[in-house]
Structures are given as C-alpha cells and as structure tokens.
Image (cartoon, rainbow, N blue to C red; front, side, top):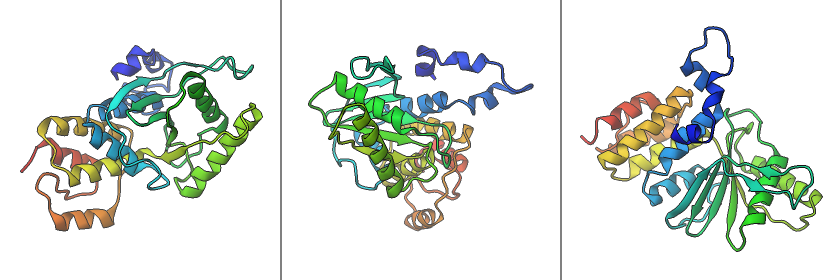
Length: 257
C-alpha cells in the first residue's frame, strides 16, 4: 500500500466507480494495489525464501536459476527511457523491478488469472528499456497473471512474440528470458515454502499479510493432492486442515503449536 501511495496510485481509489461501491470492492478492481500488497511484503522475507517462492511459482518449471543471492535493490513502477530506441514511445514502466546479486527481474503484473491481458509489445519495450539502461547483467521478464493458462507452450509463444516485436524495433537476434506465473501459483508456492521451512513469528506475520491480500482479491489456492500429503506429514509449524487461504492464514497467525 505504501508503494502504491508513493507512486501516485491512490487516486484510482477515488475515481468514480459503481454506485454504492465500497472501498474494499474498489480495491478488488485495481491491479496495482494487489501488486504492491504482495511484492512489498515478499521483499520482507529472507532472500532465500523470497526467491524460492518466485522460482517455484515460475513456469516453465526449473527455468530460473536455483541461487541468485541477496536482493540488492527493488523498485515499484520504475520509469525507463526508450526514446533512443523507438520513436513511438518515450518511456516504459514495468510494475516491479527486482535486482538480486546474480539476476535482475522485471515484473509485469495483471489483475486476473485465466484471462489474457499480457501484451507482447509492452513486454518487448520493457526488455528494451532495461537493456538501454543496464549492461552485463542477466535479466528475466516475469509475467504475473493476465494469461489464459500458465503453461510452457503459452510462455514459449509469448517469448517468440516478444522477440518478433524486438526484431521489428531493430533488435535482430535479441534473446529474451521469460517466465510466467499467476497469483494463484504464487499463493501455492508461498504455502509450500511455509510448510517446508521453520518460520519464526515475525516472518509469519508478513506471510499472513500476503495471504490476507490474496483473500481480499479472491485468489484461491486449491491443491487437494498436495494438501493430503501435507496432512500426512503433519509438520507442527504449518499443518493445514483446510485448503482455503483464509483458514491457512488463520492457522499461521496463531504461531507454532
């Protein structure tokens, strides 16, 4: 929320909405607040847990490096100058920029899982903007939500479209590193990481906030097979008796048992 306020996103809350619409209902229609609520708090996790959540949620599975070091810097809605590379646009603005010791990631987030709203041209410009400003670093684009389905074929298809768009911008031979995910997959990955690692009370508070943000936006995380195996393992610090995020959040709020 703080990042959304600092970057002037709060005004969207006061734009005219449906008659009788509450602030909570208005929040649910705005992707920037979900992006800020989730990624602000993910940054507060230890770097190894933060990266584990991102890498486990990423499709194709196993695409991202296993170890990337600490998070060196992060920025919400950075402005990258692309005026020297294209005459059509002066700048591009990814939603989140994450710079780890060994890798950089530009995140383009959309609101709804299961609906196509990601745009290859926009992603191409973000790749261009990064490479106009930074050299000698490994860079990945990450699509969060805005995909009809998060599959290997879908991500590979987007990568080809992005590289075609870059060729049209005079960047022949550009090689794009791209992964996709969804809010649901991030929620599932977060639950897996919590269930597999001892977590102290302070970190549990951060995780609970993320889960509550997912609840506000009605992000569901249903994975019955995994939950059954988790019940059998019965880890005391994160046992789950129901597959809903709401009940899971309630469990971890009570701390270790």
